[in-house]
Amino acid sequence: MKEEKERKMQIRIQNTIRFGEEMEIVDQYYQGEWKEKAGFQYLLYTNEEDEKVALKFSNDELVMTRFSTPKSIMRFYKNEDGGAIIPTPMGIQQFLITTDLFQLELGRLHLSYRLLTLDGEQEFANYQLLVEWED
Image (cartoon, rainbow, N blue to C red):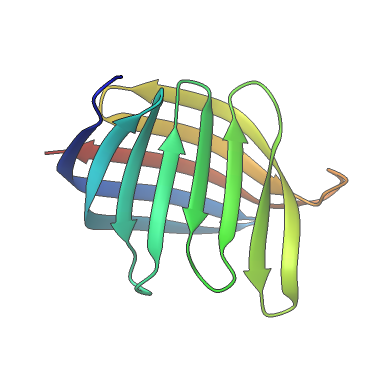
């Protein structure tokens, strides 16, 4: 059996979000941990709303889970569309995620993606996400 690796990490999340003509830039730092298990890497941390967040990823897939009540799950794939299930004030919403860039390097994951209605007809927002981690 392969031994599970685990290390404490400084995690930086930069996200540039475009909604139509508006743009928001988020730059956050978290203390967390990195694990490797069964072909996937994991980054685990607690966000500013005191919710546990897990990023599970490989070379061509990312699952981002926020353990809110109810929890939100976003799935990104390198070569196909993914999806999101997100609680909102209007109830649970489902979205289509089209990933334009999925690039995993040592200590760095860069994604460019669009959040769309399930039918793909309407774009809600466009994101440039960069996740970096180091001991």
